[in-house]
Amino acid sequence: MILPKIFPVFALALVFHTASGQVCSGFHGSIYCKTPGEADYSLSGYSKSVLLDIKKAYQFSMTLAPGRDYLISVCCEPKFKPVKFRIIDIAKGTVIYDNREDNYMESIGFSVTQNPLNIIVEMTVMAKEVKQPKFDNETRSCAGLKVMYRIIGKQGLH
Image 1 (cartoon, rainbow, N blue to C red):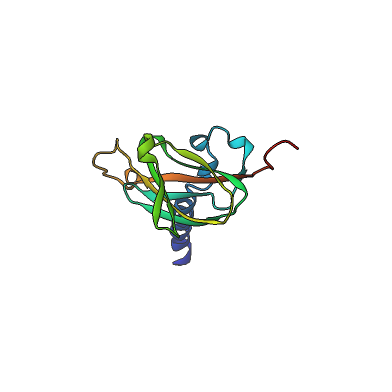
Image 2: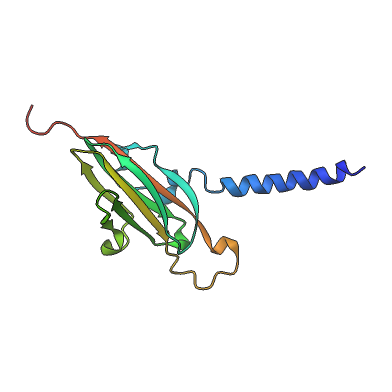
C-alpha cells in the first residue's frame, strides 16, 4: 500500500515548511531587541518579526497618530549586524532619519504633535561580518521592527 509510505514523507515536509515560516515569530520581543526606556511605551500593532535576506532593503509603511511620543527600533541576529534603517516621510518624499549618520544606532524617539504622519520604515540587514555566504542560513536573518508609543501629556503646570 502506497499511503503508509507517502504519509511520513508528507508529514515531515509539512513540519519543515511550517517551522521555516515561523522561525522568526516573536523575534521583536526577544533579548536581541531590547530598547532602553521601552517599559514606558506601549507596543504598536505595526511591530513585527520577519525573516529578511541580507543586504536587501525592505519597506514597511505606517500611519502614526498625533498626540504621541514614538520610539522606533530595529534589531537582527547578532552575527548579521548592523541594521541600517531609514524613516521616510511619504507626503514629502524625504528621508527624515537615517541611522547611518548615528553609527547605525538601533532606535530613535520622536513626537507627532499635530497631524498624522505617514511614513515608511526601510530596513536593511547589513551583515558586515558575512563575506561570502554559502548556505541559506547565512543569507537570511531574523529581524525585528518595534514601533512603540505613549500618549503625550498636557504640558505646563496643572
